[in-house]
Amino acid sequence: MTRVAFLGPPGTFTEEALLAEADLAAGELVAMPTIPEVIATVEAGNADTGVVPIENSIEGSIDVSLDLLAFSSELLIQREMVRPVALNVVARRGTRLRDVRTLVSLPYATAQCREWLAAHLPNADIVAANSTADAVERAARSRARGIAAVGTRLAAELYGLEVLVADVEDHPENATRFVLVGHGVPAPSRHDKTSVVVFQREDRPGSLLAILQEFAARSINLVRLESRPTKKGLGRYCFVIDCEGHIADEVVADALRNLGAKHGRLKFLGSYPAAGADGSTRRRAAGKAWREASAWVDEIRARIERQSG
Image (tube, rainbow, N blue to C red; front, side):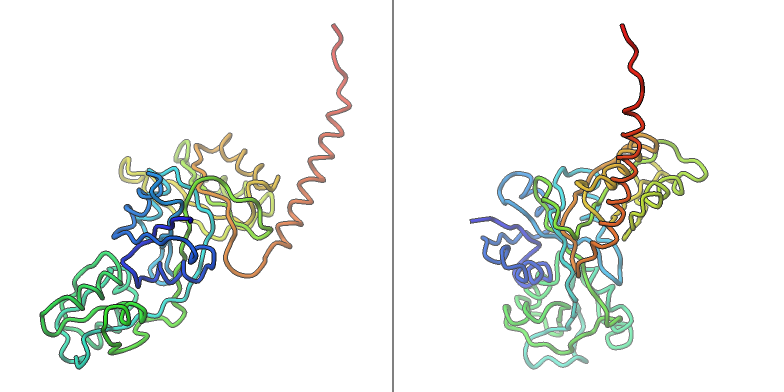
């Protein structure tokens, strides 16, 4: 049976995301207390794959996930999953909202309901947890009065708490992107993304524009662009880029080839099935144009006279 590590304990949004994938839900689920431990478990061979959050629509990138993949891990993204996120304030039965003095949760979660907390629990002490389910479990174990957590409805059910207030996130279209990480590159699915990190050879005016032009010239749509510090000094950045298409597509491979040759070192993070509806029409058109242009160049080069002797 496939072993799937995930950010636990049971009841996290990460578990909800993997349970929505039939093949992952059928595997042996291995809950890990932190994101680095999920990655380390897969790298050590104690799990076949792992699921971690990587981006939230309100708070942006989950830095620890992104940096582990970009700088220290050789695991590759195998697929992405996008799930709506509904945050709930949960506590022991009989607790009233006005009784809450301590609120426990993952910092990314409390940040997503910052305005609601300021309006309704302005005096509560905010305590950090490793995950939303960890927060709910701690609230359930604690003997202190007036303790609550921000977490999932599933976690509230698992740990015997009740939902005091549902849907406390500040923006209704709240969603989190999760990635399945493992070894190898999945075959093209006709609706894929490719993720890379570009480490510039030198920081000069127009260097980012030159990088982006490699994609624009080939009609490759970028779906994400983010700068990250390289950890080698202030002002030194690399760029994390997600684009439509698979490295098996000639046009994507050509763009990455030129990026590496002209602009700096690349770290390949994966080519993998994208979440959402099929968006392959534009990708097929760009690939067809690249193949036609390549065939034209090859036909001309075939006419080159070979030097005798």
